[in-house]
Amino acid sequence: MLCELRVKNLALIESLELSFDQEKSSGLVVMTGETGAGKSIMLRAIQLLSGGRASVDWIRNGAESCEVEALFEVDAGHDRLLQKLEESGFGRDTTVILKRVLNSAGRSRFYVNGSLATARNVADLTADMLNVASQHDHQQLLQPGLHLDIVDTLGELWPARQELAGLYGQWLTKTEALGELRRQEQEKEQKQDFLKFQIQEIRQAELQPGEDELLATEKKRLKNAQTLIKVSQESYRLFANDLLDMLTRLRQNMGQLAALDPDVVKLAENISGYSFLAEDYVNELRDYRDSLGNDPYRLEKVNERLDLIQQLKRKYGETVDHVLEFAQKSEAEVQQYENMDKNIKTLEKEVLALERELVGQAGQLSEKRRRVGRDLEKAMAAELSSLAFDRAAFQVKWLEVERVPEKMRSSGWDRGEFFFSANPGEPAKPLAKIASGGELSRLMLAMKCLLAKKDMVETVIFDEVDAGIGGQAAEAVAGKIKELAGHHQVFCITHLPQIAARGSQHFQVSKSVDGGRTQSAVIRLSPEKRVAELARMLAGDSATGQTEAWAKELLLKGESRI
Image (tube, rainbow, N blue to C red; front, side, top):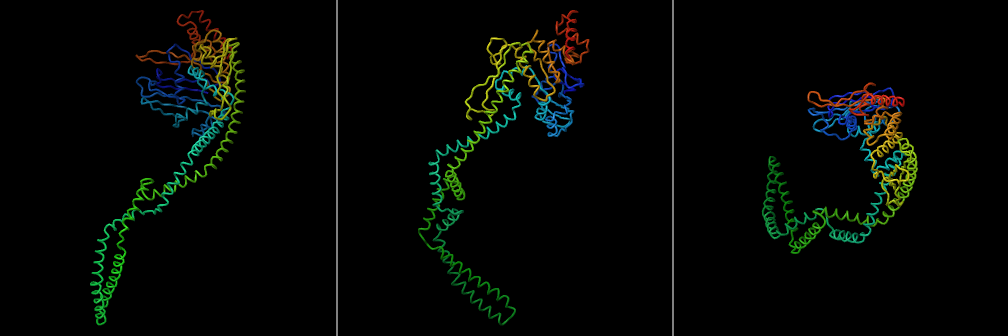
């Protein structure tokens, strides 16, 4: 339950601290005040604390930032919320303090129990702590797409719905994959023939990695073959006929010197080694000369080979390696095509198995929803009866959809919509066609009461949901809100004295000008001031002694129902 609320520099509020009774975890807290006084400050503060969008226009003029802070006491049995707190690193304490600071640059900082948090953190936590019902909820109730969500919430069917959504996602993925395979199968023969042609063209060339570079080098050599042969022949002749003979005679002479003088032995050995090395060079030069040859057709063959390689590179890759890689990938793709029939049959079996499971689960969920729908009709009839709709009709109508997987959504086949008739004999119509705002307010209140019984949320906030209601309907709405406050902490921002009189705590929001600045204030009313406030709500500025008597009577009736 919400125990304390602190607001600073929010709209017309400069500074505000409110404490709410903690004697019990239920009770009705009402807030009243003149139009424009700032009664919805409570809702705006809660919206900020819940991670909702904020506007810098909400910051009080002249301030750098606004702050909202609230202290909650959580029921020790609320395991889901306590587990969320613990898993998020905020501890498992039943006392929870939420805080948000919004600066003039539009940036927000969130805190949970003093630790920094994200907007998602606080939104997730407050979803289990607070339930806000405003006039905006009226509009949501008019959206048929949300009606199925309400049915699933009341029937506690969300786990089954989420399981179905996961299964539907698997089926959809497999079905799309199967469709793609079948499309490819239609193109298989043409595509496969083309791939085989490309592979054959590459493989017949018998390419070798780096072959183009080697051929380019050979081409350069062949273009200069005559010069290479002439120069190498002349070099060989000079080396073999002249220099080699001289080195041989030199080696022989040095051998004679070494035999006569030991000091020359080392020099003779070095010169001898040099001469033998020269003989090796001569042999290498001869081999090089002989390798050149003079095949007039070799250059033509090299050019043809390079042209073929260049043609393949233009088609399949920038380098020979890329061309060979293309061939490997194409061969793998051909293999896939050859395995396609097998893959299609395997996938067809998987899709069929998923369809059977999907249809089974969707059918079971649909039956449960219809049972919940019938229960909802009965429960709403009882709730509406207590809200001055004696013979109203509330119906959950289901759109008939062909029960095949192709007609399914992730939520199943069901398309439900709420219909309503306030008057006997009149056909029920979609909620969107209900003209009366008062009727819609009571419908929403009845729905909120049913939903509140299904969740662990301890605090419910109503923001002027009594719009368009008066007379007997106002009494009925007041009684229903008071009934809800018997097992929840309920805050109600209201303009109805019937509701205000039933509050166990009554706060008044007022607006004043101080030092040229307008500001709102919220005070808890004493019994005497409650009489005056109720009198104002009954008769405005023309309150009389009789009006005050009516106000006291309202309070007595309200207190007798507390």
